[in-house]
Amino acid sequence: MKFKTIPSHIAVIMDGNGRWAEAKGKKRTEGHRAGADAIDRLLDVALEYKIKNISLYAFSTENWKRPITEINAIFNLLIEFIDTRLDKIHAKGIRIHHSGNRSKLSKTVLQKIDSAMDVTKKNKKITANFCLNYGGQEEILSAFTRLQNARKTNQSPLDKTISPKEFEKYLYTHPLPPVDLLIRTAGEQRVSNFLLWQIAYAEFFFTNTLWPDFGREALEEALVFFDSRKRKFGGLT
Ligand code: IPE
Ligand code: IPE
Ligand code: MG
Image (cartoon, rainbow, N blue to C red):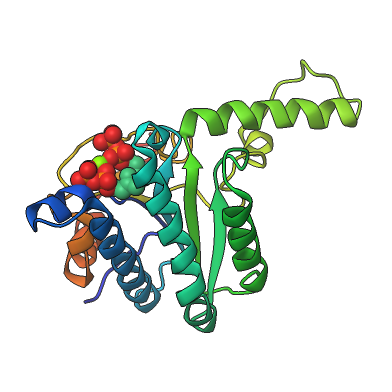
């Protein structure tokens, strides 16, 4: 398909893995596994349309409330995802980025993510931003703390006005651009603490499609929607 404007940053709240599995009489973990395949498909179609940045909400700061068995299954799938797909991802020119608080992530998970980021750091086609132990509020608070710490180190005044540009350097997503298009699957219409700062002027696309069923057609539907928007950023034209 042809589009006038392609979003430079798409953020996806990949929701509905559990419902997909339940509807098929399978375990929730199977839904998460099918969700990992959907990430692969999304990246392939995104490459085709030259979308430069994709943020994927994989585990929120609130998801720790889930049963430990499900949490472990999600992180094991992530490790498996990196182990089995990193070579292909790298060969396709995809750069891996992580957004989120590192403190609660296990050593194994951190090692996998860090090596995936290191191996792919020179890739330019797409940045795939995996949001793991990510929460928008936590990100803003930690950015503020780190900014103040940097000011202390540089002996610059702590009460000096903070510009958005200076602040954004401390967000986990730095240096990704603001989100143009936010997609949420599985029928819910809420933000669930995702990229609160970065979605200030994003267009929102909600679909009933469950994340494991998301593919080319669903992404194209979202791109058609985005292409039809008139973005004014507070101005008149
Ligand atoms: C999204 O699917 C994946 C994660 C939150 C990790 P869910 O697991 O939330 O699926 P539903 O909402 O229960 O269907
Ligand atoms: C949002 O989905 C988090 C991720 C997709 C990782 P949830 O299923 O956790 O969100 P709520 O609880 O429905 O808001
Ligand atoms: Mg959910």
